[in-house]
Image 1 (cartoon, rainbow, N blue to C red):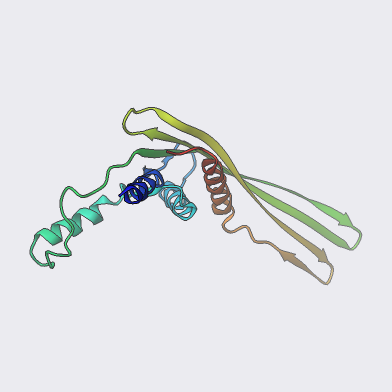
Image 2 (cartoon, rainbow, N blue to C red):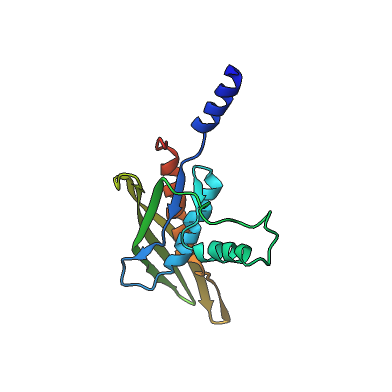
Length: 192
């Protein structure tokens, strides 16, 4: 009996805290894919295994399945039931506070040859907070900046020129960097 109680209490002690992630807000003047950033954060936190994630942004999908189960069209032994959705201990909210890139470069003139180089650096800052749903206390708050740089170069002669450039996805790369930094920092926090 004592062994059974130890196993039961050990299972409770190692249970992951339940976290709901709310949609990120755009606090910049730029066009920001805030919903994509929310998805990135959800995926990274899921992969990190820190929390049991509770769906809140797409609850319509869950309730549709519950209503389908209640309609009689689904086998009642497998149908989800009302009142079984688990509550979240914590809620994560986030905001995009910086979302831009800066370009730089120059040209070098050599007689008969011209060369140049350019670079774009993207900066994305994500501010997040985690709220204890029981007390409404902010138990964690952090801002992390992601950065990504892409470079291009080329030369031109009287016979022609050659250049290489690829800037695609630079803001997405900087965003993923900021998200990864948050998850790394969150791993160090003592979640209960």
